[in-house]
Amino acid sequence: MNSYWNSYAGAFAPGVLTGWLSAFIFPLAAWSLFWMGMALWKAARNGSKPWFIVLLLIHTLGILDILYYFVFSKTGKSKK
Image 1 (spheres, rainbow, N blue to C red):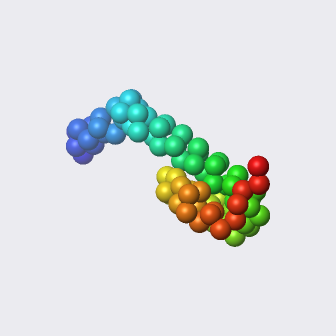
Image 2: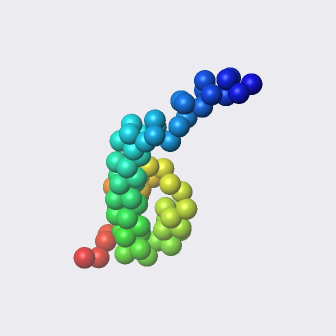
Image 3: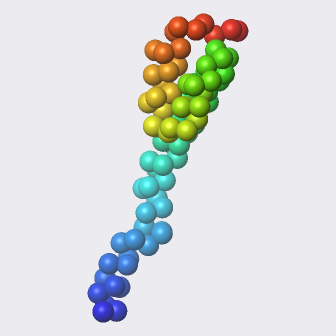
């Protein structure tokens, strides 16, 4: 049993996944954070509380945030 575990444990060691996984996770996190911030800012400026709550609670790698920013927020102009 011990040799069985040792043969598969090496594939899931933290050092093995750190390099290539961080190459995907950090850019995706930055992308999502940027678009979430932009959409939340615009929703707050437009006074759209329902959209603000939805955008705050649902994380979709920026897809919903981008849609709100460019499509759904056209009904209320942002005050600059």
